[in-house]
Length: 399
Image 1 (cartoon, one colour):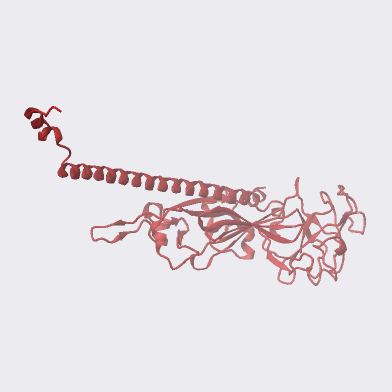
Image 2: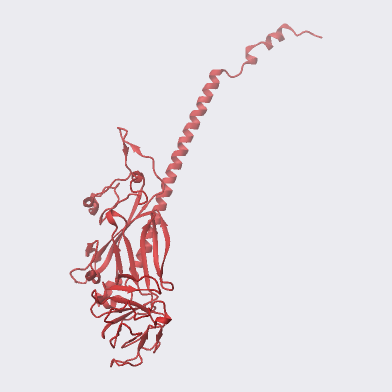
């Protein structure tokens, strides 16, 4: 065996040949890596936060626009088939389906129920679904409460199964409007003369045994004195009665199903937290053509229903992402949203951009599911506001 030379042994022992990373170098490398990871994490978190905010804001905008469009579509059709007899508006309607409890509501294209203490309002729209032009029909002979048929001057457009509304000559608490269903028409598709008022061919029957909308035992939904000659019948067809309300921070639609007499419900759009509305009245009866000049009120009497020419509406949506609060120099949280004041909200130039406002005043943005919570100030809100003319109310006044 050959022993290694001294020169070879010195080379093996050389520090240059055997040196690796020192502890200091490892620590520096780890520190740089941690800084890189920290910076990258912060960038990703900020990007994701902005993405969530942007997406939530976009969703709130889309939801609000769709909610406003849906309500506006029903508002523009409100009153169809009813406004040819403006004097009937404001009449109390009574109706009853089979053994269900009697229901009452007001004959009006739109009925606004104000929410208590800033809670969301409720909107109800009423219209005829009758195809063609549902003309009012004049009663030719006195109709007693116990009668099962109306003798009319003309039955043009009346078909079996139509929902109709009897309107007295002068509506009052003792003479209300009644809803019934046509069970037979003695002159279907006719509409002939019978101007003499005798018991001729023009009859509209509402037998109780043939429709659940017609009660036996004397039609208790009819006034005691019945409907005298000169009263009016309005043809509602299948009868559209649609109600919009805020339920569990979502816009909900209720509608009357005439086949069952029951209200059906469906959630339309989530994260809709407020609905505010006002009547636009033409109190001077000068045939307002620019509805922006209408007199805006929260409530309207039965006598004023014939003067409603528009509604003013605000829909408020909220993003579904609670944002991280900003702090001021003193470490106090800066609210993303603040409570508005009626004075500032009505003046567009004076509105606080952080306040939830509309032309009707300040809007309560509290969480309706948890009124005591204060986290409402950490969300972003979108207010969609518009004025909707009730064309079926305006057109008859322009004739």
